[in-house]
Length: 199
Image 1 (cartoon, rainbow, N blue to C red):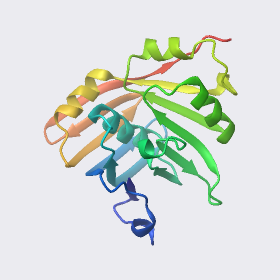
Image 2 (cartoon, rainbow, N blue to C red; image 1 turned 90 degrees about the horizontal axis):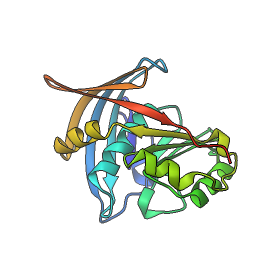
Image 3 (cartoon, rainbow, N blue to C red; image 1 turned 180 degrees about the vertical axis):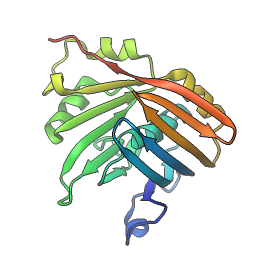
Image 4 (cartoon, one colour; image 1 turned 135 degrees about the horizontal axis):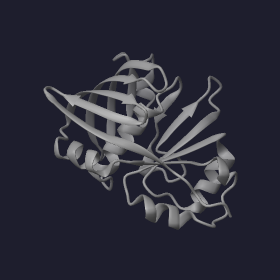
């Protein structure tokens, strides 16, 4: 779950980073061009895959990291620690600014997340309609500010089919459309915002 900006680990990051001993390590080299946010970075990510983590969850986690990339972003222990978000963005004091979850977190988890962080974002690789129905009418602190996004499931399936322990690709983002290029091949898909009905 280590992530390095511009391919260079910050001092002390390796020794101090939590990695589950039984996890499988994947290495991603990503050239990110996010036109929507004006973010252009070269990322070298070492991502620990928990034994219970599906390939779909893993690639969604990596794409979410790219879509939310900012100073202070980091993978957490994820599934190894249910009290942590999948990805966190912290300020220079260590305070949690953004809680980023993957999949279909329940209302109680999002309620706690919204109390812990100013911004809460969910990227789901599952049925978006089911997630919306699951959360509809539930009590969630500042639920109106919750951000839900559905990642194109066909894109995820195509990426999973090409998943290797070491993977390099370019990722361009424009109008929430993702264009993922590996060699001469380009995969594409959309990240759709989801809306919860007011309580």
